[in-house]
Length: 537
Image (cartoon, rainbow, N blue to C red; front, top):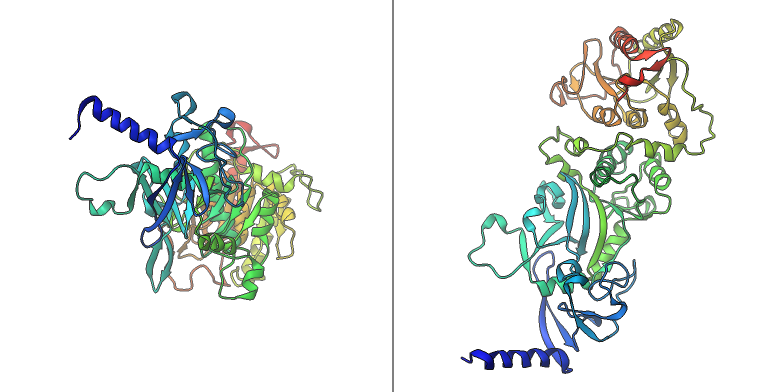
């Protein structure tokens, strides 16, 4: 073995030969796929690595052009790729070694970081996508949430979970011993190969809102009131933690596993993201008018392209992951709704809908606390007709007494959504039978003097809508027909003792249960028809 100065001289000569003498060297590169790693051969020529005809800079050097090594278009290792564009070859330039002041290889790798997270909902920097799998490229795999909290399964077959939608690629050297079985969900990738993967990825629009579910999306409550609500909460937690006064609008809204309504009409077996009333599309287009909406068609094309895609900043939601959380309470957002946010985190959404509103509903608050009874008497889940009439009479009496300003409402599919939000924006008390319309409690103004009264059968405790009221900052009372009422923390465990559940068409109600509580809240929280400011949330 050669030692001493001679050995150092031989090594130096070899390095000079490698980087300064034009040559082509074949190297293997392993890019993980869903099933097994596939070997690809790439070429190094004058310090550049050609990958399927694409040229990128060798990971140990940086081009001296522009004198910088930033991220974004034109910066970073090998340059960035235009949104939705094709990878462009990097022009060969004079090479200069990286210097500490210019940023190290760690920064140029564009590694994945979870910058905000709760089970089922995450804000992620530099998430990658290849062949139907999200790739987490990290040098700190122990900092990645458990895969069960990310919603790891793509779909089910006869009750069996199949496929993982996330894969962790840990940037590190070879192992020093046998791998532990419970760590098998982490795969290793070398620094050089991680550099190749990240440098040749195609950059997608950011920030992106991505819903990783394949079912329960084509429903106003299940999308807006569950998965979108959780995503919006974690996005606002990201802002709260960084002291941001505002957030950028989403440029892309992605549904990788479902289709739009036109696509589902062609193939009725396909799951869609749009509800029959059009609420989901209305709210997405109103809140984020410049966003591009993508469906499974777009993502199947990416899956089949064999390209690697990078999402610089993505808010991702997954119902299954949310249900795994320790505070789930049988719902997907039990943990994320506990994340701290600014008090007005929902008001911005409501205001976007009502900005410039000129519809028939007055936005002026009446001179007394406003109570709305949202009727469902034309649906299959409703009060007994006589019970409905008795409730209306009792509320009219309370109105005539001057305690409240009472309005009887009934929304139909054709009722414009801005009109519906306008009604709830000035409402202090809501009474309704368990149903989709209670999703609108999100648009009430916060305050402990405001409340939702949800009527369910006497043996039921279905906590679909109570978390929405709490998220909006108002109280929620579950009214068990003529029996009693309870708050979310007092109510029994979720479920119904009878098989028909909360879908009866002959529910009963004792108006006194509700009216007594309304009187109590008005006396405690209101003066001259207005909520007392120092008791407001």
